[in-house]
Amino acid sequence: MATLLILGASGDLTGRLLLPGLARLVRHGRADGLHLVGAGSDDWTAERWATRLTDSFAAAAEDADDDGRAALDKLRTTSEYRQLDVTAPGALARLVATLPGPVALYFALPPAISEKACELLSPSDLPAGTRLVMEKPFGTDQAAAFRLNETLTRLVPEDHIHRVDHFLGKATVLNILGLRFANRLLEPVWNNLHIDRVEVVYDEDLALEDRARYYDGAGALRDMIQSHLLHAVAILAMESPVSLHERDLRDGIGAVLRASEVDSDFAHSTRRARYTAGSIGGRSIPDYAAEAGVDPTRKTETLAEITVSINNARWAGVPFILRSGKALGGKRKEALVTFKPVSHLPTGFTGQDMPTRLRIGFGPETLQLEIDVNGPGNIFSLDRAVLETELNASELLPYGEVLEGVLTGDPTLSVRGDTAEDCWRIVDPVLDAWAANEVPLDEYPAGSSGPATWEK
Ligand code: NDP
Image (cartoon, rainbow, N blue to C red):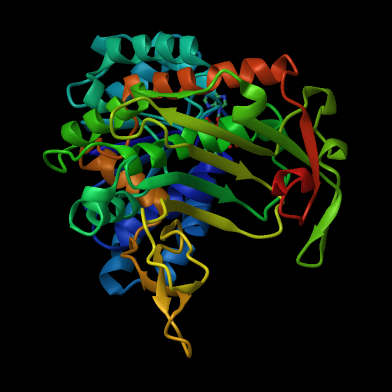
């Protein structure tokens, strides 16, 4: 890719995540020759843009070698800022026409503005090889995602559209696939004959952190489960792909999500809650409903849990429990696979026979296998042992991995159009049921592990 055009250059995503991710990529010599252009509706001077780049590149520059620092300097000094209102007819097309191609257009804009900008483009505005990078949320429901897909595929081929999911990095995806498909110990038992349930959990200790404008309109189900955790389920549950090529992987992901749904008895298959005042690590956290920018009557959930069924031969009957929440006492970011008990335990053993469990940690990337062993002391007594290792982690930041996929033309990590629609199809009925108050909005004090009634 010759040019990366970031639309929304002055925004939060660009400063906090995109530019630092790009810097790490450049510092490792993995984006040589790239021309960077930032665009925004404000009239920024070249100096102001250069300062933003210096600030955002600082961490990567600090631990870079001479070559890395030189590459960062080159990118910064050759970069330019262009003032642009993407909603003005023809403005974006005119800018693209002046840039060395092929160009990647990164829409780091409010979602409605990105949609409008894409609607204003026509295929002849975009030179061959153009890539479009769309941020989450991709649409607001299944119908909106379908319409947005129609707009985008009118402009460029599907494999030139990158719908960003920075949660599951390349290392995480490959770690799970390696574990599942390269181990005879796991591969034959990875199904409903042997697995009792799978939990995918992303509990944060962070609270609202001044993000009411975005978060209060989204909530935990849209913010994490729809956008990210369903993909983690797909990687955990997909059939064995023929290869690691994007087509094989994304076909496998698409097939498993097409077979997935939430049982329509939503009062049993889903739970939601909102945090009240509390404290986390000595920090006092105000009641979510009283935070500036929050409309309490919206009943936005800060903790969501849904149970997904995968209706295929491998997984029928196995609950996949997806949970994510904010302001929780303990950080828990993992997939936990619980195996069924053995069909017969010889009499004579004492102690507790516990199910075998496999934990895959998401950041840090870890693996724990919990198994029963004998002793210590009494050889007849069953005890618990945990085999633990660290998994391979990427040297790139999550957004560095996203950008590397864009710049090298590899869409493996991006969400395919049909999958984006399916993720909404799975959660739309839940959102409707919650909006109709079919499921109570429980409460939990910030810093706790969730509503007391959920412990059961
Ligand atoms: P911000 O509101 O911080 O930034 C939006 C940017 O869009 C600003 O640079 C603004 O420029 C620009 N913009 C708005 N209207 C126009 C226009 N008509 N023409 C040109 N530029 C325009 O949003 P975020 O950075 O937080 O979010 C951007 C996207 O990333 C959203 O889709 C969000 O959902 C997604 N996202 C954000 C995350 C985050 O942590 N921030 C995390 C994951 C996804 P100006 O100020 O000059 O008007």
